[in-house]
Length: 439
Image (tube, helix red, strand yellow):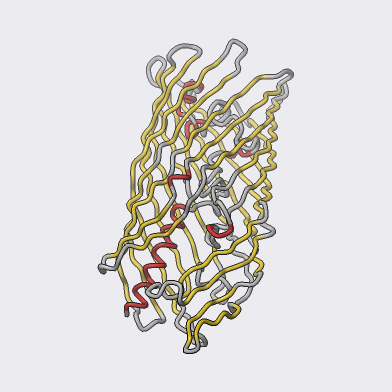
């Protein structure tokens, strides 16, 4: 029984890591979902927070609500097609037997863990008296979805990984004068996770399976300031706070002598993010946009999981780095045309420091964004937005070791060695904006 309870503890560690490692669905730095706007998708999110061309600016910088003088509703959906193929390059198991340690190749097939995903968002803003604006957003700031076959070579590291978040963020903005506005909001963020992996029971013995499910709701905030110049250029800085998630859930074990359900919990900090964005009007309907996003992923130095059954805490070293995303974009609005066109490029850093800290739940690496988009104003009150992005990720090497029997660390291990050499994502988004003029 102790062997299997300890194995369950390792499952909890891996599962909670996935809560912090949310990138596969959104494919942003670390595990952030970048796709909070279809309009912004077309310009690689450059200028988001000051562009003023859709309501998602309130996610990136709540002060931007001062740009909207009418009630407006917006709904968007981004569809992601993810390719994440693993190539085994010598994965091994080290086992302690009667004659001492032996090292053998890990059995199993290569697999593609990429899963298609959909990222929705909703926004609503309305003016109040004078220079005050109110708004509310419903977004998914984090998300994870990977799925591997039960016979793949890395099954003791990960099978299914899925995380869903819902962030409800009421906000208010105030125009100090015609050049400066400030804003802030409160985020109520719900997280729900399901994660699983195979349980090693011995050579030639069918694997068991361990699955964790857990959820939590926590509170954070966001603040921002925006400054306009005489020539209609705009610049803004904002921060979204860390959100502490006290995750509680169940570990379900099947196919083993220790089948059952066990409680586990962990406290993790989803890191704060700082945004800086700008827009400079050029000529003949063109605008130049730029942006930077810094995420304090170095908070994620270790993960500590506690168990209801009295077992010792399980601690996993993560040692992540802070990450930086830089983007540049162009917007073109021809005179007397219902169309607006957008183009963008971005470089997105991964916080994963090396192959030893990379896992198949989150095969994260630096990536480049290539984006295009368009908006069509079908009437004075309705606009339809389109966006497309192709992401190319750097090769992601993996050399990660886990204990097959946690009660005997170092005696029974599995080392997954390989490379995700063709990571790519295609994103297609569509969005509608509807204005409600004042009577």
